[in-house]
Length: 127
Ligand code: HEM
Ligand code: HEM
Image 1: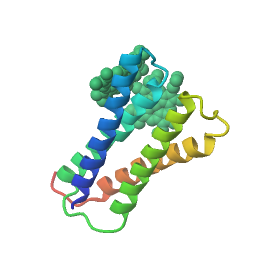
Image 2: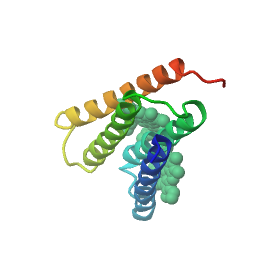
Image 3: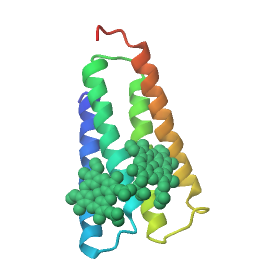
Image 4: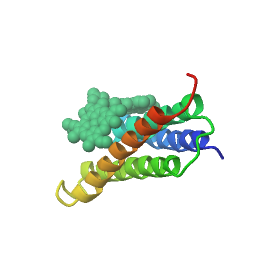
């Protein structure tokens, strides 16, 4: 399976999880998980969709290990952020105890963005 489709599938799975959480929040009239919902939708779904699109349009046929490393960094980072925020805003842990998970997740998401920027800047394409 191509890296673009992998990003798309992972993003769609984040979307399903984020939408379920959004519907639960709306139905229960308890919006305390809003930051988790927002980041699952935006970092998990929207960013993965953007990365899938970048691969499709600007990096077709790209080779090398960095594309797989970038994929793993983003997915693991988004998952860590999602789990950390869910735990934090459900009262299972505090900012200190969850700092390693949230901090690692945030750094992974940032590193993935830097890696994507590097790949796009170096890609030899006509567009
Ligand atoms: C079934 C669909 C959805 C439901 C039921 C839902 C539900 C909610 C609820 C209840 C809130 C809290 C609002 C508040 O307390 O002010 C919220 C916030 C938010 N949602 Fe959704 N949502 C849905 C889809 C989406 C989608 C598709 C996205 C983005 C791709 C999204 C992104 C956000 C963001 C960024 C916030 C935070 C907004 C802010 O900071 O004020 N949601 N959503
Ligand atoms: C990856 C590292 C990220 C970190 C550490 C981070 C951190 C935060 C923090 C601390 C807040 C305030 C939450 C609150 O006041 O309760 C926030 C809110 C928000 N962030 Fe992020 N963020 C990250 C990535 C992103 C990205 C990539 C997006 C968009 C694509 C985004 C969109 C938002 C939105 C829409 C809100 C307002 C929603 C709310 O109030 O819950 N964040 N973020």
